Image (tube, rainbow, N blue to C red; front, side):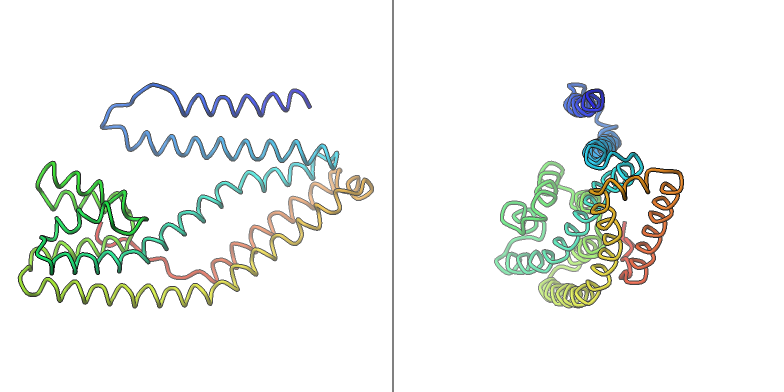
Length: 273
C-alpha cells in the first residue's frame, strides 16, 4: 500500500513539474506544443484518477477484479468530463452569437465601422466570446487587415456557427451601405431561430441521454454494493468473475454507445474553414 501511495504522489509531482517547466518553445511550434501539453495533462489526470480509485476500491473490497473495474471507469471520467465541457462551451457560443450580431447592428447604426464595432465586443460583449474577439481586435489594430484577422478568429473559435457568422460579417463588410444593417438584422433572426430549434431538439433528446446513463450506471452501482460483502467479493475474485466483469463492461459500453448514437442529433460540420 505504501508503494502504491508513493506511485500516486510521484505521478502528481511529475505532472506538476512537467506542466510548469521553464522551457519556452519556438513560436512556430506553440500550437502543436499546446495540444500535446493538454493531451499529456489529460492522460496524467486519467492515470491519477484510475490509480486513486484502484487504491480505494482494493482497500474496501480486497478484490483486484472489482478494484480494476472501477479504476477503468474512473480513468474514463476525465475524458467524459472534457467532452461535456466542450459541448457546454459550444452551446454557450451558439446562444451568444445572436447578442453579438445585435450589438454589431446597434454599433453600426451609431456610426462605427464593422471592424471597430466587433473590436469593442472584446471588452463588453458576451462573456463566452470575449477572449477570442479581444484577440481579433489586437490583430486587427496591429495589422489593419480585416480578412486575416477574421480567419484567425475562425481558427480560435473552431465552431460551425462562428464560421457562418464570420463569413456573413465578411460579406456584410464587402456589401456595406444601406444593406449592412438589413443583413445583420436578418442574420440575428436566423441565428435565434436556429438556436431555439436546436434547444427544443436537445430538450427532447435528454430522456435518451439520461436513460442511457442510468442503464450503464445501474449494474456498477450494484457491483459497488456487493463489494461491501466479502462473500460476494470472493465470487468475483476468480477467473470466472473476471470474465463476467469484463463481459459486463463490454456490454455496458456497447449498449451506451448504441443508445447515444440512436439519440444523437446531427453534428453540424464546419464548411467555411
